[in-house]
Every structure is written in structure tokens, then in C-alpha cells.
Image (cartoon, rainbow, N blue to C red; front, side, top):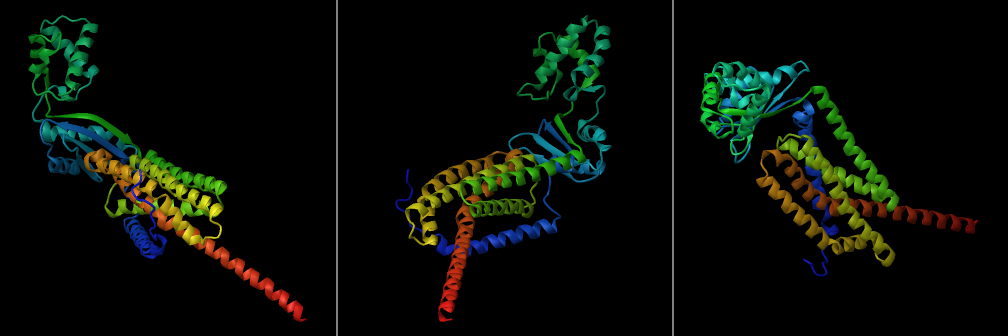
Length: 398
């Protein structure tokens, strides 16, 4: 499929405005990173606790944030999952000692703020062993004779019913459990006496210690640097060393601008964003290699062509491939960004920005570096030739 037939755009003739744009973006990115003390790392890297909580009704975001901020030190983040009644609560941990306290303090705060008056166990937030232990004696007193295995099976069935969609961890009334095999009116009566129902369910909690976060941050930086170093060696071996340098500088340009935009828009960088950045490194490098490969082929065929014109021709020859692959990938990532929800927001944002910047850098960053180096090499050759010729003339005169 050809979008352009015999394209002949003078890309490199208009490289100065694009180079100026890159300079502006890099300066803005570096300035934002310096002023804000570096990127804004997520829980994965700075350490903390993330709790996924589902509510019966629309989550009161401001009330949740206010209640937790009053009880828990450090920054608190509350994100609502679009299209659901679920929120993601993140809190920063300042020391390892806070790890054991984080979940209990967050859970207690939510219960005191939204749980209402209840006695016994919160059925919407209890595990199997705790519920079995709590119901064993009351069921016996109520005349419900169950062996230990039967009791374990009954409790497991009730909790599976609770956790199965559309309930997904929340039931509104104990009478809903009558649909579970083995749940008799006597069992329901005991549940009503010994348990209560909170209007929310803590789906899961993820905790990362500060030391682990620092290690993950270091490993993420090393992974990116190793990827760039490996690609530099590969391209230098396959082409020439200057091609590798140009490609790595272009990719470094892409990563720096992408990270800078995260800082400018105050977005968090977590493990999914690092995965997106590594994907961007490979994607941008692949696009650059396609252009470089065409340049190498044309150098063999069009030996008398001036190098800038040859590079411009190579870019035009790969234009259809670039537009099709980058365009379709961009549309996919844009859909993820718009409709993927908060969980995929950072990942999709990095890819959307990275594809745009990566495609642009293959043309207006990597290629001009090659042309500049080629021109510098040609100037040195001419100077050397003139010096040699001048030396010969001097010897003849003598």
C-alpha cells in the first residue's frame, strides 16, 4: 500500500526549525526535572502502599483523601477507575517500620469513616480462616451441626459467591447468600448477628518498601542504559560507529523529552512507564535503522550523489513504511490513552509521546548528525589534500 507515490519532500532542507523545536523541548524538560528535583516516581520506585477499594456507590474521592490525609503522614493519592465504583489509594512510606502499619491504618480509617456502626466481623472484608473461626461456636449454639470440613466448605462457598461478579467482593444484604448451597435460614440468622456489611471492599493491597523501590529505580535506569549501549554496539558493528552514535543520540533525545513531558504534566513514572520507555527505545531504534539501511544501499548505487541529497532521498523512499507503521501504532496507543483508564494512562501516554518524538527524531535528529559528520570528514579530507599538494609545490620550488 502506497500513501505517497514517488515522494520528494525536502525534509532536511527544513531541519533548522525542527532542531530548534527539539532544543526548546529538551531545555523545558531539563528545567522541569531540575526544578522539581527529578521525575515524579510512583509507589513502585519511592516505596509505599497501594490499596484497591470498591464501593457500593460512587466513591467520595474528596472525603477519602481528607480522611486518610488526617491519619497517615506523607502524600496521599486517590484515583477513580473510570466507569467503575473502584478507587486506587496510594500512600507513601517513609521507613520499613511503616510497612506493617500501612494496611491496618488505611483499613481502619476507611472503616471508621465509611463503615458505619457494626459489630463482629465485616463480611465484605474478611478472609476464610477468620470467618471460620468466628462462626464455629455461634453456629453450634444455633443448632447448625457442621463438621470442620463442611464448615470450611460452606465458608469458602459464601466467600466465592461474594467475590464473583457482579458482586465482586460486595454484597448488600446477607439474604443474598441464600442462593449459596448449604446456607440455611439459621446460617443467615447467625451471620446477621455475628457479622456486618461495610459499603466497600478492599480488593487487594500492594506494598513496596523504600529500599526495594530504590533498587527498582536503579535497575530501571540501568536497563535503559544497557539497552542503549547494546544497540550502539550492534549498529556500530552492522554499519559504522557514527551510525550507532547518531541512533543512540536520537533515542536518548526521545527518552529525555518523554520523561521531561511526564515531569511537565506532573505524571508519575512507575514500572509500566519504564516498560513503555524500553518499548520506545526499541521502536525508535528500529525506525532509525530502516532509514540508515536505505542510506547504506543508496551509497552503493548512487556514489556520485551528494550525501545530503542521498539522505533526503532515502528518507523519502522509506516514507510510506514510516507513515503506515508509525500511524497505525500511534492510533492503537491513542485508543489506550483515551479509553484505557488510569491503570494504563501512564503507559499509553509514554507510547503516544514516544512514537511521535521517535518518528520525528529518525528524520530530523539522527539523519542531520550523519550529514554533519560526513561534511566534517569531507572538510578534513580537503584540508589534508590541500596540505599535501602545497607541500609538493614547496618542494618543487626548492
